[in-house]
Length: 156
Length: 186
Image 1 (cartoon, rainbow over the protein chains, first blue to last red):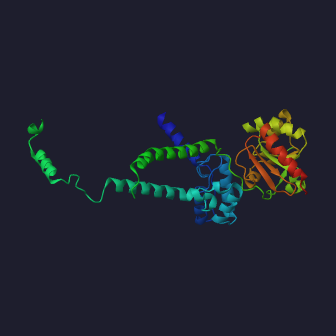
Image 2 (cartoon, each protein chain N blue to C red; image 1 turned 90 degrees about the vertical axis):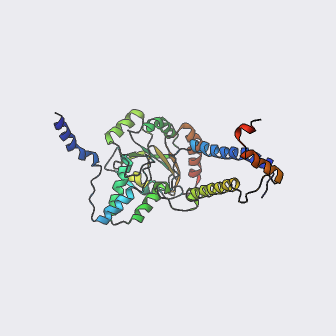
Image 3 (cartoon, rainbow over the protein chains, first blue to last red; image 1 turned 60 degrees about the vertical axis):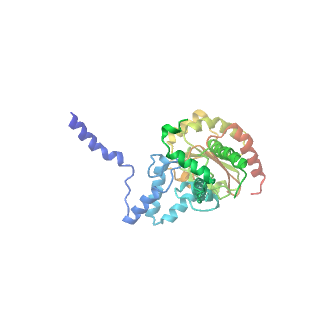
């Protein structure tokens, strides 16, 4: 019974992956398709690419990408087509412009602030000039004496 | 650089407090934003052209050219869409006022299920067109149903609403906008 079940499940397994079975004219087209579906956002389930998502819209957009590639459109054409309709949000790799400036420069600014804080902390904790706290020679001698004396003797 | 010690001590308390407040403000803003409200790149751009079969008479077609000179709404709906059910009475009310042409884009739906929906819940649409494979939807940048576009007499998209339209939206946004657009010259 068990082997039969395993065989049955193995026979069914291709179905799980058969999301789309698109034919491509050449390997370049296939490569463009594979890269586009990982760069375009599914707008229904927003943290997935259209390649990852099972949403109907994602399937429709994959079909659109495939069709446009077959018509000989370039990757840039397809990205333009998508941003014309869905805005920059559809791109996982948004272009650098005024509106997305914070998105691109924010991490750099945070890094700069972090480095500044680290620099300030290190500078405060490590004075470059070691200083003698006790400058009076007599007191210094007393300290040395105390440090070299035996523990039992300085309990008083 | 030698700041007075009391100032440095104050800074130790004030700086984390300021950072906390800034972070809290950003998080509060983030919580109140709707991530599904994506600004449409179509505002003030010409509406994408379509020519699609009518739901009730599939042999006839409606195209964007037929609507030139009219202020119209494009409401994207489907019988499988839950929010559309909530929105439907509001659209019925709006239709009664006859302020605007309401075109329904029946998105990725079964024609029979769609017709049945209109028969039972009422039909607010001047006309509904079919988009069974979702191509018109893609052209209009539709990503969630329902969505409602307001198009002016020149065929320019002036407003887009994502999600169910409420009575409040109709009173505060749609009716004033429609009145303004109706007053414009074609």
